[in-house]
Image (cartoon, rainbow, N blue to C red; front, side, top):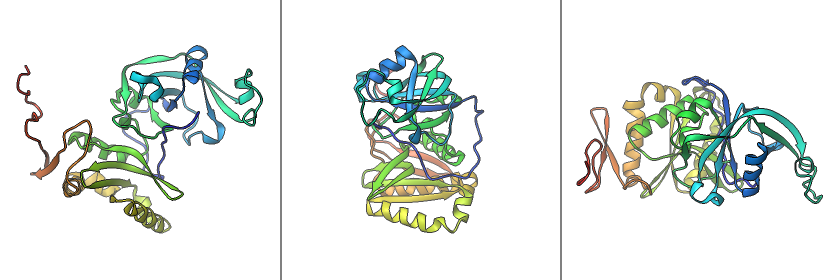
Length: 295
């Protein structure tokens, strides 16, 4: 399967917490109709052993459908409980294929008990690259969009909840390539006059002197590509969200001309009395008020 979707990030040493984990889920992509038919008819999916994610093995699988699925593309519609995981070569998985250099490649063959349909699809707000998204069954059940699924860090989750509260459109785990390096941004915000990367680093990340040159190299690479970078540590996210993190984000977004989003009108933000207010365009209805002609 050719990746069309990628996930990953620098390590976050913060412990996972929050919503109860009721089963580890792996979101994977399906990008061709033959694999979709195998999944539906034979109830199995394959992952090359050398590309398996670090959180392994999954108890559940969910499947992100790509552009070949037309109106059902860029969303998760189906999921299933894992019954068994076997190690198989490609020749064993596809005995009808002519022998080739790929025939001896080894895979995890993930066999499902059944394939079920989510009550509501989990959509991607924007085209993006993902391969695997390890998450929890709880998040799969409550997610409205792909960004709700990421489960790398409680610091990121806290920032994400705040961004949703102020309706600041962002993409989580957004990948940026620079020369031979691929950087996973915790959050990417696209603005009228530039792009903003927001990073939530665990406390031990900042305490490790070995990582300082890595951070500098990363920041320099992003700056050379036109990205503005904001970094917040654990204490700032936990204790100074309203007084420091949100105002810094809002100030930077406004300085970059307000957010640029295909799904929402262009907008800027203001902070007053600890609250964030959107600066709405003319004719846009404020939250809680119906637009003209609506009941």
